[in-house]
Every structure is written in structure tokens, then in C-alpha cells.
Length: 338
Ligand SMILES: Cc1cc2nc3c(=O)[nH]c(=O)nc-3n(C[C@H](O)[C@H](O)[C@H](O)COP(=O)(O)OP(=O)(O)OC[C@H]3O[C@@H](n4cnc5c(N)ncnc54)[C@H](O)[C@@H]3O)c2cc1C
Image: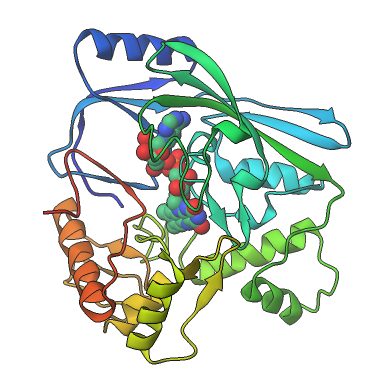
């Protein structure tokens, strides 16, 4: 978002020994240790962070054949989209819909990164991490990661316990691409592609994301965002019926989940609460291309982002009686709660 102040202490850790060293150094001094990837899902307070920020810069990608599949292991500091491109080029299915998401590999299990019908939890088989509590390296299998919609054990429950060092994804050589979203289907149809390759789907996803300012593009006036600012609410049937009644619109977007809950569109709720794309107090505003992204302009401060996010949340709550949950992580004592 390009807001926020400095870290009191900062190190870029290029190997695992440096990460362990940083952890010990912070523990000895009673400092809070914050782990930074690409910084694309963070809002940092204007006063900065009174602690130790470690930027994970571990690099390396390897792969091995595993019973008809291929297991790709990437170090936490690898740029995510380059890994997706690498898989697509080799014809390995499983990540193609996750094209164009900013950030690094190590952050992908944290909120179970997802888009266009794919989530990393569908392919992650193992997460190697430094367990801060025990001070040792552990390998967590898929079932130990507690994945859910934009969540995991690393984000909810045991946030701050693990520093991700590397992630293994199980991909399918020669597999078909996932085409699960109407937007992707119609982009492929527009291009006259009936049997899309992984590369075709990647191209469609990138084009759709670009049209919504959801890729990092230095020339895009909406570029300073953290992507979606709020999660799509997951509600039970009774809450869904209440919101549906309040909306009075049979076309209200909804997706039924396997567990009986219903996922609603936060963007739609925001628009129905009276906010349109581009609306905002000035230095911060809704993106002109996506009503779920708060964008920063010249002179924006973290305090402006928080104040505007509170206003959006209050308007949706007043209209529908539902409280939106922010997606980014806040550092430096920031919170939407007063
Ligand atoms: C334009 C735009 C579009 C986006 N679109 C999507 C989307 O479609 N789907 C989606 O899911 N997200 C999306 N995001 C959000 C973001 O890209 C992802 O959450 C991404 O995984 C964050 O990666 P990062 O490396 O930048 O993490 P950071 O922003 O640096 O960190 C995010 C959180 O992860 C923690 N973390 C990072 N690395 C590690 C590590 N190695 N070990 C432990 N904790 C770590 C941090 O401490 C922090 O809590 C978008 C963001 C932007 C700006």
C-alpha cells in the first residue's frame, strides 16, 4: 500500500542460519519479531514497527517425480508468480489460476492464497518451518496446516509460531487446467479457445486480473492496494436468509459451500451499502476498478486507510447487520477495532 513507518530493526535473511540468528537475537532482547515476505498483504502503522522485521529472502526451487505427480519444493523467498509460470511452462497443473498474485512463496500457506477456484491448500503437501517455540525446524504435512478459506493454522490459532522456510506443492504433469469461474470461461470463449491449455488459462487469469488492477503494475493508478481489503463473508443459512431479505435482490451473489454455509460477495455488499468504485475521502479511495480494494494515492497515511476501512465496515454493518473482516495483516498496533 506504500504507507507506514520504518522497522526499529530490520534484516534480510538469505539463509536459514540468518533466520535462526534473528530469532535468537530478538528473543534475547524481548523484541517482537515480524516476518516479511513481499509486503503485499500488510498495513503498517505510520509510526512504524517497534520490533525486529525479518525479510525472508531464501531462494531455490527443486522438483521430483512422485507416483505420477511432481512435487515442487520452493524456498519461502521465491517470488510466487515466477513459480506459477515455471509450473505452467512445464505443463504441471494445479497452480495456473493463481497466476498474478503478488508476494512470495512463504506467505502462500499463511492465508491459503486463492483465486478463480484454486487455493494452495489443494496442492500443498508439506510446509517446512522454523517453530519459534521450540527453536527447531519442523515439517508440517497438509493435514497439520489447518487450511480454511483464506486461513490456516499459521494465521488463526497459532499466528506467529512458525516462520515458513519452504513449501512443497504436488502438481499434475499433463493435467487439465481448472476452469471454474464464469469470468475465465468467458475470456477463453472470447478468444475462441474451446480446449484451453494451462498457458491459456494463465493468460486469461492475468488479463482478468489486470482489468481489475489485481496485478502489480507500476503504471496503474490503482496499484497501491493490498488486493481485496475484506474477506467474502461465510455465513450460516439463517444469516444468509436475513441478509437476503435485507438486500431484497434475488440476484445477490452467493456460493454454497460443501459444509452448508454460504459465501457472500463483500464487493457486492459494499456497493449495496452505497459506495461506488472510486469513492473515498481523497488520499485513499475504493479502486476505480474493484470495489473490494482500498487504494492509496499521493499523501496517503496508514491512519487514512484504517479510517476509511472502518467507514466501509460501518456502512455495510448498518445496511446488512454483518461485520466485514479485513484480509490484510496489520503491524504496529493498527486495528479496525477502536
Ligand atoms: C494487487 C493484489 C492482488 C492480490 N490478489 C490476491 C488473490 O487473488 N488471492 C489472495 O489470496 N491474495 C491476494 N493478494 C494478497 C497477497 O498477495 C497474498 O496474501 C500474498 O500471499 C502475500 O504475500 P507476501 O509475500 O507479500 O506477504 P506479506 O504481505 O509480506 O505478509 C503477509 C503475512 O504473511 C506473513 N508471512 C509472510 N511470509 C512469511 C513466512 N515466510 N513465514 C511466516 N509468515 C510469513 C507475514 O508475517 C504477514 O502476516 C493480493 C494482493 C495484492 C496487492
